[in-house]
Image (cartoon, rainbow, N blue to C red; front, side, top):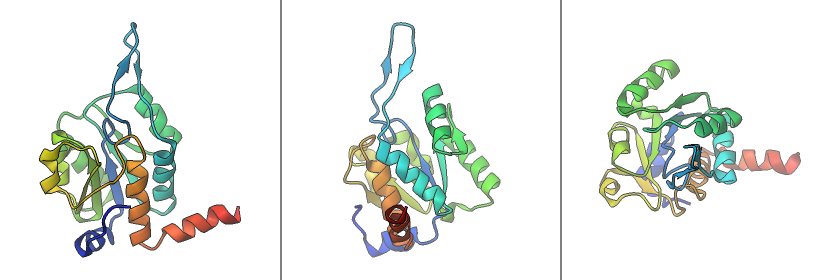
Length: 179
């Protein structure tokens, strides 16, 4: 789990939405293309379960990515993620639209990123988290860093940490045990 300083715990209490970058966070950042230009990515199943757990606990999940990919759209829709912003050169425009749609303010939002294009959101949200293999330039702006790599369970680590701090993780686990 992410190192839990008092500041990190305090920042996490009122989080109602978590925004994830895709390349380098929900995927390992490697881009594969076949000869016809078809793009392929891999996603970690545990990350997907984490996104579903957040949503089941009334925490909104959003994707704001600089790139566009039909596979990302398909994967997020299969997980029930409704707030999908792709091809966002200016991530702030998507961020502001999301806040308006959800009637939230930046102090109720966390952002998980890995590189410089995420910095604008990381400096505006209440809680900024970097994945383990994030570019070192963004680390001074983050409140926490995962132990797991992007695309290899880092998002699940974030989800579990937020749910644990908000006292929602044990209930979610028990629901699976009772099923």
